[in-house]
Image (tube, rainbow, N blue to C red):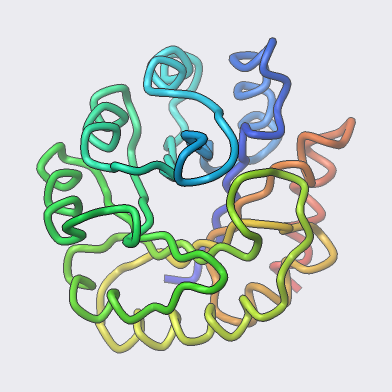
Length: 220
């Protein structure tokens, strides 16, 4: 699996025009719409809940990729599944029973992912990799958009790629935090195939120009 995916994070979009923003960024070439869900408990910020996902589902056919930065996890994971999410990721340290949470998401007919903070080891992945459809490596500390990429994440991406390849399963390797035109090639070279970009896209006047520049870097 070598097809790259660009997931546009609406955390950096204009919240007053979310439906319009989602349509615009998909028209500009984004593959997925990424939801950074924060609860002001697991992380120091508060963003949006399942009702926003349900409302935006009517505005696009693009896959909705939900990243839960919440604790507890299970009820919100199920709620987002039922609100139209296609994939739901969560942090293993935020779940009391990681295997059970993965099973809950899969039981809703959705793809399930595990997200790892910059200082969180990948150890748990070995024990549940047969239930995982996506591994999300955070390259910033979660909670706020617009942060700079943490270079140590490259080593974790490389390790995650080795684990995924050894499993023989079709698992996406996504990276979230500080992704921009200038570094997306390095992140891909480390083994990532899916790239979350928020302020790098929504902070610019021409979404298509940014996404095209990212794809040009990935293709070179």
